[in-house]
Amino acid sequence: MRFSVGINYWPRRSAMAMWRRFDAGEIREDFGRIAGLGLDAVRFFLRWDDFQPQPDTMDPVMLARLEAVADIAAEAGLRTMPTLFSGHMSGVNWLPQWSLDARTSHGRFRTIAGDRESPYGIGDFYTGGLLEAQVMHARAVGERLREHPAVLAWDLGNEFSNLREPATRYDAAEWSRRLTKALEETSGIPVTAGTHGEDLTRDRNIRLAMLCAPYAFATMHGYTVYSAFSRNRLDPEVVPFLAYLAAGFSQKPVLFSEFGNPACPPGKLSPYERVALPDERPNPTISPDDPVLAPYACLTDDEMAAYCTNVLDRLHADGRLGGYWWCWADYADELRGEPPFDRAPHELTFGIVRSDGSEKPVAVALSAFAREQRTVVAPHDMPIIADDYYYRTLPASTKTLYDAFLGSVEERRGGAR
Image (cartoon, rainbow, N blue to C red; front, side, top):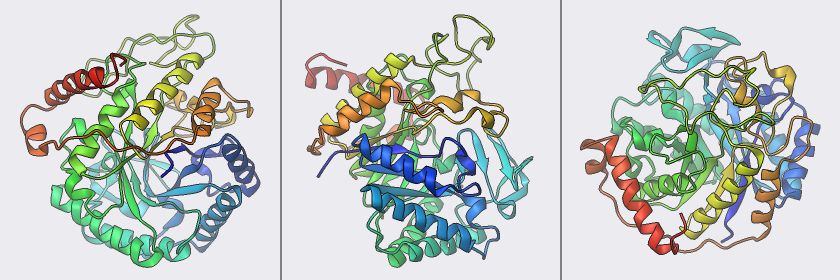
């Protein structure tokens, strides 16, 4: 089996408005370039409020556009991972108006519903009427792309615990089981779900052994600048460690479906090693006009390229199924005033190509690795007792286990870490 090297995708001219401002020509051009770089897979996102305007209604125009994207991928020789119920994306929760609960605050992430900001968060995402609406959604997209040759797997959500944490681990497991069953029955295509680092470093009532039981493989997301245990911005072991935890807890093969880091503005350096998490003291404020320092933790172009290669090399050596970079392109400057970029301008520049279409050094690094067409190797894993990990000392247990992981990989990799 080939070690998959892929990319997360939104178009640079429309970003999260992709489905409403649909441009098949731009997508075809982008997919052709992605394939030309030697990458084999694209993970893309179905913005939930676009596809399901009412709990019992799917938009036929959007379903047709979904099929068109899959067909374009097939033409380019790419496999895809469509991500449903998106949902959480780049610091915003994009939600259908009907899914909101007036008794629930939006919390840490702002809600955008019907193109307007809402003070409310989503209702119980994992049970009841919202689950039934998702099952209907899953069946509709499954039927539309039944056995489509360009669909590698369905993804049940992008960091879905950022929408709302399940009340119990059993709720999350039943949500996973019901939706997997609906997609497998209608499409004949396997399923996974986009879990992320905070599902491991915080107790969000998600246990991968239960959640991932019906999946073909587990997936994980992680970033050095957003990980409390990270040693520094360039730490190449953060992503492999999160994959190691995911493999140990789920007892499934692991695809690392999202990694990357914020890019520094041209000519500027990172002012600190990582972003402060919500329960930590905020980082010092840096003016966007500072001539030397970026206003956020970031990597320069050359640092990003080296980081990409180092992480992919380690994921491959550890027996993972592949790694997908976040993301394809920097977004057009005219999107700067739209969510999420109006409050998070750093989200504009995670791409491997610039907004003018020119390639960054990380594109060259990603392409060079992909062209090696490495084969997946046997994983170097060991069972981990999830209850002990979650219940005893979180978040200290993460740091303790990370230190042990570093010791083991130093020996196995001959001192390189």
